[in-house]
Amino acid sequence: MSLYVLPILIIVLFVYAFFKKINTYKSFVDGAKGAFALCLDIFPYIVAILVAVALFRVSGLADFLIKLLNPLFGVLGIPSEVSELVLLRPFTGSGSFALLNDIFLTYGADSYIARCACCILGSSETLFYVTTVYTSKTSIKKLSFAIPVGILASLFGSVIACLLCRIF
Picture 1 (cartoon, rainbow, N blue to C red):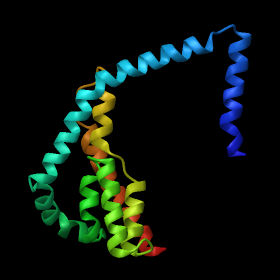
Picture 2 (picture 1 turned 45 degrees about the horizontal axis):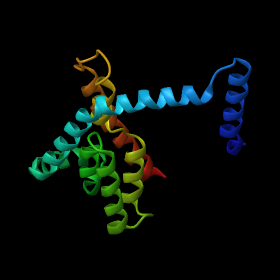
Picture 3 (picture 1 turned 180 degrees about the horizontal axis):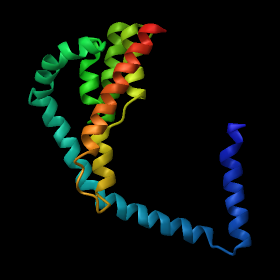
């Protein structure tokens, strides 16, 4: 059934456009122009967050925070092997997937550590990247509660993910 949803949706949109006398090609081109302008507008924000992530890792601050937070993570049930993933996930998606790959290669894809890492990736989001991209095009600039709540939710998701992996 799911294989047919997208083709059916496209056909329905073309039929609707035909009856409403909408030029679909022109609408598509206008949308593409808007998307290009959007990409140009948010590009500096994306570069800024990518540079910040690189500086965070290269400066040694990530390693320092991992060592500092490992005892807390241990109490919460998060294995020390995935501490870096818990810490970097709010900042970078591609870096998180690279860490996941390293975990797979080191511990095996079916290990408890790998299952925890997969669940952590599935239960969290690249919080700072997403807020950077979304708020770059809106008037919302004060994120006083959004960021701490997002970090807390990500940590809570990681704890629950590891707990569920331990149980099942």
